[in-house]
Image (tube, rainbow, N blue to C red; front, side, top):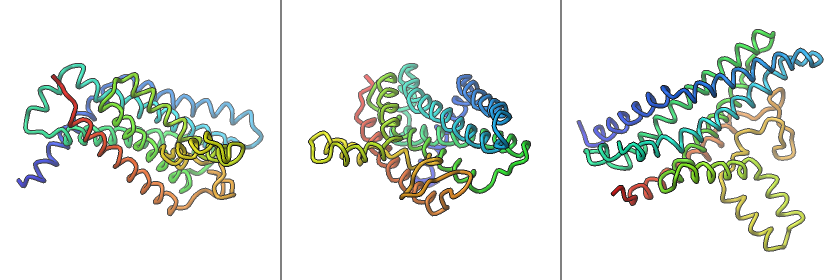
Length: 270
């Protein structure tokens, strides 16, 4: 086997172990059940609406997938790497013919597979609720769910970046703060260019809005995009927008992983 093939085999071995470890975690099962519970509760709210049952189920279902997915991405990104350090298992893995960057990429790959599987599972459950109430899942829903998955993968890379050099608590706090800021970049930019235009604080906010990951790109149903209201029920984004969002997530997430690899390589385990 070539060196490249051996490297891929080692990365996949770490990824498979990470996936198995994540799927054995009961916290993830509880969170997924919570998302399903929200979807079931949307049936009750739908009955209270005026012939808008399917619309309510879709809105609450997507919000539930996004919210639970964010919690899972934070939990996995912050804890799975720190667990290796706390339990000292990394000391037995790193000295073997496994580079630190392979270990880190393997961890991310395993977490990405886990997030993809759980997001797909929740999407299938949501589709079942929608169809059982006379609606259709549709291509727009599929695009929205793909955007949510892209957001989760990007958030995972950010969490791994902080986990590469910080404690789990600080990593969770930093990552959560960046997510909150990133979800509100349009409002932040509007505030900086409006009331604070020409002020030092406004300039700082503009820099912050341009540097932090723009998580608003991935959950835009009900929001405003280039002057048009975007809705999952009509006038949702095209596949080209999804492709652009995927490119952004790949570039920003790749940069986070590269920086995480550099920091993890310099970390002292003694």
